[in-house]
Amino acid sequence: MGHLLVLVEVLSLALILAVLRSVRHAHIRVEYSVAWLLAGVLILGLSLSDSALHWAGALLGVPDPRAAFLVICGSVFVVVLYRSSLRISGLKDANIALAQRVAILEYRLESLDEKIKSQTSA
Image 1 (cartoon, rainbow, N blue to C red):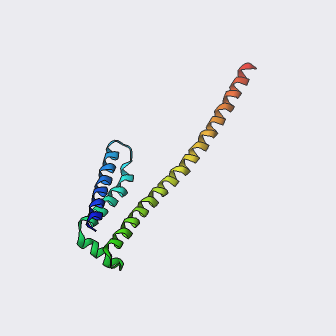
Image 2 (cartoon, helix red, strand yellow):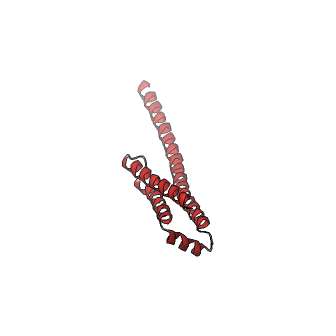
Image 3 (cartoon, helix red, strand yellow):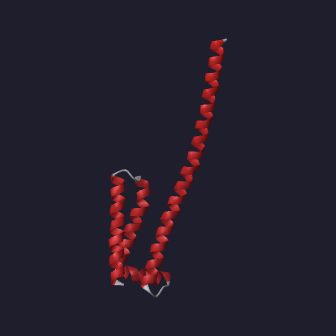
């Protein structure tokens, strides 16, 4: 399990650094980065502490700490992805409403232009 934990440590550090870099360069908003940062820190903490990993396994009722680790990692990322899906759905709905409002405004503008043209030509 030692090699697996070293790999997870490196990957979680890479995730944390990538998120911080993305925040710095304004590729991701701060409120969206918090969930990813928490996920990276949680996974890094579990991979660094054998006692925490055994405690989590006992809490979940799983005798093998590796299985508990995989369950926790999977659950963390499912929660983060679910939150992201909620945000994306809300943004899509807002985008549709905005597009409809723009279409209505364009129609009104065209109607006003036609009305002004008909009044000035008469």
